[in-house]
Image (cartoon, rainbow, N blue to C red; front, side):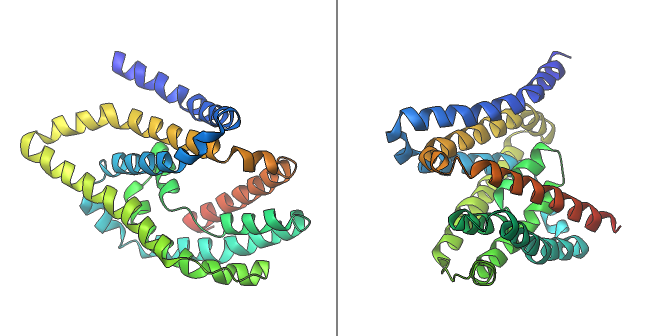
Length: 260
Protein backbone atom coordinates (compact mmCIF):
# COMPACT_ATOMS: atom_id res chain seq x y z
CA UNK A 1 0.00 0.00 0.00
CA UNK A 2 2.82 2.40 0.89
CA UNK A 3 4.56 1.61 -2.42
CA UNK A 4 1.36 2.45 -4.30
CA UNK A 5 0.99 5.74 -2.43
CA UNK A 6 4.61 6.68 -3.10
CA UNK A 7 4.19 5.92 -6.81
CA UNK A 8 1.02 8.03 -6.96
CA UNK A 9 2.86 10.92 -5.29
CA UNK A 10 5.77 10.42 -7.66
CA UNK A 11 3.45 10.67 -10.68
CA UNK A 12 1.86 13.84 -9.31
CA UNK A 13 5.29 15.46 -8.92
CA UNK A 14 6.37 14.49 -12.44
CA UNK A 15 5.19 17.69 -14.15
CA UNK A 16 6.67 19.93 -11.44
CA UNK A 17 10.04 18.20 -11.72
CA UNK A 18 10.17 18.66 -15.50
CA UNK A 19 9.03 22.29 -15.36
CA UNK A 20 11.54 22.91 -12.59
CA UNK A 21 14.27 21.46 -14.83
CA UNK A 22 13.46 24.10 -17.47
CA UNK A 23 13.75 27.06 -15.08
CA UNK A 24 16.79 25.66 -13.28
CA UNK A 25 18.47 25.17 -16.66
CA UNK A 26 17.76 28.77 -17.67
CA UNK A 27 19.10 30.00 -14.31
CA UNK A 28 22.33 28.01 -14.60
CA UNK A 29 22.80 28.93 -18.27
CA UNK A 30 22.34 32.64 -17.51
CA UNK A 31 24.63 32.90 -14.48
CA UNK A 32 27.20 30.18 -15.29
CA UNK A 33 28.02 30.66 -18.96
CA UNK A 34 30.83 28.11 -18.86
CA UNK A 35 28.33 25.32 -18.25
CA UNK A 36 27.34 25.30 -21.94
CA UNK A 37 30.57 23.50 -22.90
CA UNK A 38 29.46 20.50 -20.84
CA UNK A 39 25.74 20.52 -21.67
CA UNK A 40 26.08 18.54 -24.90
CA UNK A 41 27.88 15.67 -23.17
CA UNK A 42 25.35 15.64 -20.33
CA UNK A 43 22.44 15.44 -22.79
CA UNK A 44 24.25 12.69 -24.68
CA UNK A 45 24.80 10.47 -21.63
CA UNK A 46 21.41 11.15 -20.02
CA UNK A 47 19.58 10.28 -23.27
CA UNK A 48 21.42 6.97 -23.54
CA UNK A 49 20.50 6.11 -19.93
CA UNK A 50 16.91 7.19 -20.53
CA UNK A 51 16.46 5.12 -23.69
CA UNK A 52 18.24 2.15 -22.11
CA UNK A 53 15.83 2.22 -19.17
CA UNK A 54 12.84 2.39 -21.54
CA UNK A 55 14.07 -0.50 -23.67
CA UNK A 56 14.59 -2.62 -20.57
CA UNK A 57 10.81 -2.87 -20.33
CA UNK A 58 10.36 -4.13 -23.92
CA UNK A 59 10.86 -7.81 -24.82
CA UNK A 60 12.35 -8.28 -28.30
CA UNK A 61 9.42 -10.36 -29.57
CA UNK A 62 7.04 -7.44 -29.03
CA UNK A 63 9.14 -5.22 -31.28
CA UNK A 64 9.29 -7.91 -33.98
CA UNK A 65 5.50 -8.31 -33.79
CA UNK A 66 4.99 -4.55 -34.17
CA UNK A 67 6.58 -4.55 -37.64
CA UNK A 68 3.57 -6.50 -38.88
CA UNK A 69 1.24 -3.56 -38.18
CA UNK A 70 1.35 -2.26 -41.74
CA UNK A 71 -1.69 0.01 -41.31
CA UNK A 72 -0.08 1.87 -38.41
CA UNK A 73 3.23 2.21 -40.25
CA UNK A 74 1.61 3.50 -43.43
CA UNK A 75 -0.63 6.01 -41.67
CA UNK A 76 2.31 7.26 -39.59
CA UNK A 77 4.48 7.81 -42.67
CA UNK A 78 1.72 9.68 -44.53
CA UNK A 79 0.93 11.85 -41.50
CA UNK A 80 4.57 12.53 -40.59
CA UNK A 81 6.05 13.11 -44.03
CA UNK A 82 3.19 14.46 -46.15
CA UNK A 83 0.35 16.01 -44.15
CA UNK A 84 2.24 17.54 -41.22
CA UNK A 85 5.05 19.16 -43.29
CA UNK A 86 2.50 20.91 -45.52
CA UNK A 87 0.53 22.16 -42.51
CA UNK A 88 3.77 23.30 -40.82
CA UNK A 89 4.75 25.28 -43.93
CA UNK A 90 1.33 26.97 -44.13
CA UNK A 91 1.49 27.99 -40.46
CA UNK A 92 5.06 29.25 -40.82
CA UNK A 93 4.12 31.25 -43.91
CA UNK A 94 1.21 32.84 -42.09
CA UNK A 95 2.88 33.62 -38.74
CA UNK A 96 6.66 33.66 -39.27
CA UNK A 97 7.33 35.12 -42.73
CA UNK A 98 8.78 38.27 -41.11
CA UNK A 99 11.28 36.23 -39.09
CA UNK A 100 13.37 34.28 -41.65
CA UNK A 101 15.71 32.55 -39.20
CA UNK A 102 12.85 31.43 -36.96
CA UNK A 103 10.90 30.40 -40.09
CA UNK A 104 13.64 28.00 -41.19
CA UNK A 105 14.17 26.73 -37.64
CA UNK A 106 10.46 26.05 -37.30
CA UNK A 107 10.40 24.14 -40.59
CA UNK A 108 13.41 22.06 -39.54
CA UNK A 109 11.89 21.33 -36.13
CA UNK A 110 8.44 20.31 -37.29
CA UNK A 111 9.02 18.48 -40.56
CA UNK A 112 11.11 15.89 -38.74
CA UNK A 113 9.13 13.46 -36.59
CA UNK A 114 10.63 12.66 -33.22
CA UNK A 115 12.80 9.58 -32.92
CA UNK A 116 13.83 8.95 -29.31
CA UNK A 117 11.77 11.78 -27.76
CA UNK A 118 8.36 10.45 -28.76
CA UNK A 119 9.37 7.05 -27.37
CA UNK A 120 10.12 8.68 -24.02
CA UNK A 121 6.71 10.31 -23.73
CA UNK A 122 4.95 7.22 -25.10
CA UNK A 123 6.48 5.29 -22.21
CA UNK A 124 5.47 7.94 -19.66
CA UNK A 125 1.89 7.84 -21.00
CA UNK A 126 1.89 4.02 -20.83
CA UNK A 127 1.38 3.77 -24.59
CA UNK A 128 2.51 1.07 -27.02
CA UNK A 129 6.30 1.48 -26.74
CA UNK A 130 7.21 -1.59 -28.87
CA UNK A 131 5.13 -0.22 -31.74
CA UNK A 132 6.84 3.15 -31.40
CA UNK A 133 10.28 1.52 -31.28
CA UNK A 134 9.51 -0.40 -34.48
CA UNK A 135 8.71 2.93 -36.16
CA UNK A 136 11.91 4.69 -35.07
CA UNK A 137 14.43 3.40 -37.68
CA UNK A 138 12.22 4.21 -40.68
CA UNK A 139 11.36 7.62 -39.26
CA UNK A 140 15.05 8.37 -38.83
CA UNK A 141 15.99 7.26 -42.36
CA UNK A 142 13.10 9.09 -44.07
CA UNK A 143 13.66 12.37 -42.26
CA UNK A 144 17.37 12.36 -43.11
CA UNK A 145 16.55 11.83 -46.78
CA UNK A 146 13.71 14.36 -46.86
CA UNK A 147 15.11 17.29 -44.81
CA UNK A 148 16.97 18.84 -47.81
CA UNK A 149 13.85 18.38 -49.94
CA UNK A 150 11.61 20.09 -47.37
CA UNK A 151 14.04 23.00 -47.02
CA UNK A 152 14.26 23.45 -50.78
CA UNK A 153 10.47 23.33 -51.23
CA UNK A 154 9.34 25.25 -48.15
CA UNK A 155 12.23 27.60 -47.34
CA UNK A 156 13.94 28.00 -50.70
CA UNK A 157 17.24 26.72 -49.34
CA UNK A 158 19.12 23.51 -49.94
CA UNK A 159 21.09 22.62 -46.81
CA UNK A 160 23.08 19.38 -47.06
CA UNK A 161 22.42 16.94 -44.25
CA UNK A 162 25.39 15.10 -42.79
CA UNK A 163 25.03 11.37 -43.26
CA UNK A 164 27.45 10.83 -40.38
CA UNK A 165 24.88 12.42 -38.03
CA UNK A 166 22.35 9.79 -39.11
CA UNK A 167 24.79 6.93 -38.45
CA UNK A 168 25.74 8.37 -35.05
CA UNK A 169 22.09 8.73 -33.99
CA UNK A 170 21.24 5.24 -35.16
CA UNK A 171 24.14 3.61 -33.33
CA UNK A 172 24.24 5.68 -30.14
CA UNK A 173 20.56 6.28 -29.44
CA UNK A 174 18.88 3.19 -30.91
CA UNK A 175 21.26 0.26 -31.36
CA UNK A 176 23.44 0.83 -28.26
CA UNK A 177 20.57 1.19 -25.72
CA UNK A 178 18.78 -1.76 -27.31
CA UNK A 179 21.85 -4.01 -27.10
CA UNK A 180 22.53 -2.95 -23.50
CA UNK A 181 18.90 -3.58 -22.52
CA UNK A 182 18.81 -6.96 -24.27
CA UNK A 183 22.07 -8.02 -22.58
CA UNK A 184 20.78 -6.90 -19.17
CA UNK A 185 17.59 -8.90 -19.63
CA UNK A 186 19.51 -12.01 -20.67
CA UNK A 187 21.91 -11.76 -17.71
CA UNK A 188 19.13 -11.15 -15.18
CA UNK A 189 17.15 -14.00 -16.74
CA UNK A 190 20.04 -16.35 -16.02
CA UNK A 191 20.62 -15.36 -12.41
CA UNK A 192 17.15 -14.25 -11.24
CA UNK A 193 13.54 -15.19 -11.85
CA UNK A 194 11.27 -13.31 -14.25
CA UNK A 195 9.10 -12.20 -11.32
CA UNK A 196 12.10 -10.75 -9.48
CA UNK A 197 13.28 -8.96 -12.63
CA UNK A 198 9.85 -7.47 -13.35
CA UNK A 199 9.48 -6.35 -9.73
CA UNK A 200 12.88 -4.65 -9.91
CA UNK A 201 11.99 -2.87 -13.14
CA UNK A 202 8.64 -1.73 -11.73
CA UNK A 203 10.44 -0.21 -8.75
CA UNK A 204 13.46 1.52 -10.25
CA UNK A 205 12.84 2.25 -13.93
CA UNK A 206 10.18 4.93 -13.61
CA UNK A 207 12.30 7.15 -11.30
CA UNK A 208 15.36 6.60 -13.53
CA UNK A 209 13.37 7.64 -16.61
CA UNK A 210 11.94 10.74 -14.98
CA UNK A 211 15.21 12.03 -13.55
CA UNK A 212 17.14 11.22 -16.73
CA UNK A 213 14.57 13.20 -18.71
CA UNK A 214 14.80 16.07 -16.20
CA UNK A 215 18.60 16.11 -16.61
CA UNK A 216 18.24 16.17 -20.41
CA UNK A 217 15.81 19.12 -20.24
CA UNK A 218 17.96 20.96 -17.70
CA UNK A 219 21.13 20.57 -19.78
CA UNK A 220 19.40 21.57 -23.02
CA UNK A 221 18.04 24.81 -21.56
CA UNK A 222 21.27 25.56 -19.69
CA UNK A 223 23.30 25.06 -22.86
CA UNK A 224 21.02 27.16 -25.08
CA UNK A 225 20.07 30.00 -22.70
CA UNK A 226 21.73 32.72 -24.79
CA UNK A 227 19.90 31.58 -27.92
CA UNK A 228 16.58 31.48 -26.06
CA UNK A 229 17.12 34.99 -24.70
CA UNK A 230 18.15 36.16 -28.17
CA UNK A 231 14.77 35.17 -29.67
CA UNK A 232 12.70 36.16 -26.65
CA UNK A 233 10.65 38.63 -28.75
CA UNK A 234 9.71 35.96 -31.32
CA UNK A 235 9.18 33.30 -28.65
CA UNK A 236 5.45 33.97 -27.94
CA UNK A 237 4.65 33.77 -31.67
CA UNK A 238 6.70 30.61 -32.01
CA UNK A 239 5.00 28.98 -29.03
CA UNK A 240 1.59 29.85 -30.49
CA UNK A 241 2.46 28.32 -33.86
CA UNK A 242 3.90 25.18 -32.25
CA UNK A 243 0.77 24.76 -30.11
CA UNK A 244 -1.46 25.16 -33.17
CA UNK A 245 0.49 22.51 -35.03
CA UNK A 246 0.40 20.16 -32.04
CA UNK A 247 -3.41 20.44 -31.94
CA UNK A 248 -3.61 19.75 -35.67
CA UNK A 249 -1.17 16.83 -35.43
CA UNK A 250 -3.14 15.28 -32.59
CA UNK A 251 -6.36 15.60 -34.61
CA UNK A 252 -4.73 14.03 -37.66
CA UNK A 253 -3.34 11.11 -35.64
CA UNK A 254 -6.64 10.45 -33.87
CA UNK A 255 -8.60 10.48 -37.13
CA UNK A 256 -6.00 8.22 -38.77
CA UNK A 257 -6.04 5.81 -35.83
CA UNK A 258 -9.82 5.51 -35.64
CA UNK A 259 -10.52 5.86 -39.34
CA UNK A 260 -12.97 8.75 -38.95
